[in-house]
Image: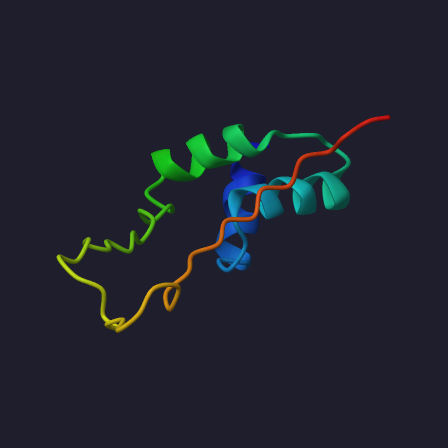
Length: 83
């Protein structure tokens, strides 16, 4: 099974470990977890490290304000309320 997973990953390199696990289960009828696929691909050096975007905090805002209430920030948090 391991060789089949590796071959699938080589045939379709654009798929993530999660997508590979689902595709493998669909094609072969054998469930394999995303974590197992990830560990297997990492052991074979087929997983590239994720690209991190580093953002540095500024000392001042880019868009300067001249009066109160010109610069606003919003945060949306979704909470499911039952009842």
